[in-house]
Length: 296
Ligand code: NDP
Image 1 (cartoon, rainbow, N blue to C red):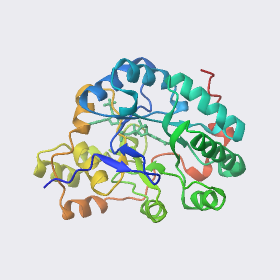
Image 2 (spheres, helix red, strand yellow; image 1 turned 60 degrees about the vertical axis):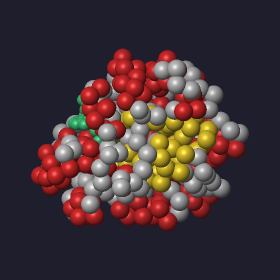
Image 3 (cartoon, helix red, strand yellow; image 1 turned 45 degrees about the vertical axis):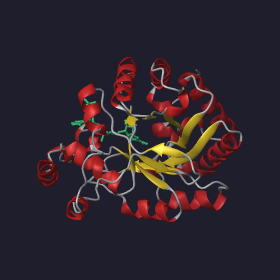
C-alpha cells in the first residue's frame, strides 16, 4: 500500500504539508496565477521569501482562493539585509503586511551570514520572540551548514523546525541532513527536482534527463520530476518545487499514488556528485548579497 506522505509534523507539533509550491524567480505578475493553479491542484503550502519580491501576490492568491486561511501553510524568509534583532522583527512586519496575514506559518532565516554571525543570531532571537508572541507558528533556517547549526544551537532556546537547503539527486548534503535529523530539524529541499542544475549556466547536466531517473520514471509510468519528488517524500523531506506552468504544477503534486522501491531510492542516492549548484553558504556576505527589502 502506498504510504501517506502528505503531511510532516514539525518538532513543535505543527503540521506542514510536505509538498509546497516554490516561487523563487516567479515574476510578480505570474505569481498569482501560479499560486492559484497550485491551490486548484491541491497544494496547501507555498514557499516565498522577502527577497523574491512576490509576497504580495502570494498573499493575494491565498486570500482570493476562498480557502480558509488556516488550511494554507504560508512560509517565507527574512533576507540577510534585515538581520539583527529589531531589523528582523521589522522584517516580519514587512512580510506579514505584504502577505496580508496576521500570522506566518513558518518564518525562516534565508541564509547564515558567517562573516557577521552575531547579527544572524540576533535575527534568530527575533524569530524566537515572534514564536513566543504567536506571530509565527514555527521558525527555522535555510542554507545552514553543520557549523552554522552548531553555533546557532549553542545560543538558541528554540531548535529550528526546518533547515531549507539545496537537495536534489545531484547534490544531496547527507551530512547536513543527518545532523539536522539527529536534532529534530527537518530538511526541506530547495531545487528539489534539480532546477539549479538546468536553469543556470554551469557544468551541470540536467537531472530531468538523467538516464537512471528516466529509467525509474518509465518503470513507474511517472515523469522524472515526479520520481525526484517522491524520492524526497519517501526519505522524509519536505520539497517545494517551483513552476509557473499549471500543467507542471499539477504534475508535481501528483506523486501520492506510487512507491519507489528500496533499489530505486538507492539508485537515486548514488547519483550525488557533491557539486553544489547554489552559492557557497560560507561565502555569503552583505557586501555581495545584501539589498534592501522594500517596506510593505
Ligand atoms: P526546482 O527544482 O523546483 O526546479 C524549477 C525549474 O524546473 C523551473 O525551471 C521550472 O520551470 C522547471 N520545472 C518545474 N516542474 C517541472 C516539471 N514537472 N518538468 C519539467 N520542468 C519543470 O528549482 P528551484 O530552484 O526553483 O527551487 C524550488 C523552490 O525552492 C524555489 O521556488 C524557492 O521557493 C526555493 N529555493 C530556495 C532557495 C534558498 O536559498 N532557500 C534557493 C533556491 C530555491 P517552469 O517554471 O517553466 O515550469
